[in-house]
Image (cartoon, rainbow, N blue to C red; front, side, top):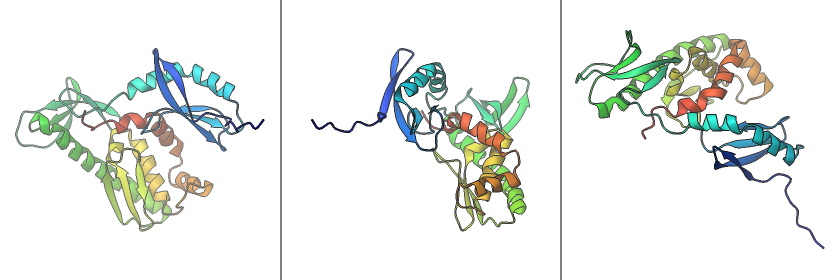
Length: 245
């Protein structure tokens, strides 16, 4: 009797989170040495399994991670628009959004009795646009400063630096020396923005992610692992800011 080939791992599975089924994609990796559960910037949870692993072990691992999964899904449950009274991080420090009620003026980040605050002029319906423009300008200034340092360290020339609003990427680099960055990096602590700046500048030396590339990043930023780890743990949360509900 001819038996059809059955894959070792399913393409997807389900987990019960707070009593509700959650669909989880299964990705088989030849490089993975252990089981890993992650939530990409876009899409649902992904269970990564080693090519030589066992599905019974993968299921047992997944069952142990349901509490973690529930917490992460709640933290990234929906968009976080810039609205009156909401809190948003600025270089890693949470600020409360306060409308000034004034027709004209510029956004200001001030420390007042109630705590760090962002004072935004204009009508409430325009606060999101005004804040996004302000964040882009702040990110541009911070990234230009850090890129200049890393470019000098690695002896490369940068042609241009632009802010983007990608939903899945923190930065990109062209062979012509044009660097693009996600403006939401200015929401993160300074060392995170610095890591992404070093990462993209290093691509002007190595246009890949080989060991030589990572050695180049570390050459200009010895503490690169700190920013890399923070972004891996919290990047998804940052991507939700500034998106209208």
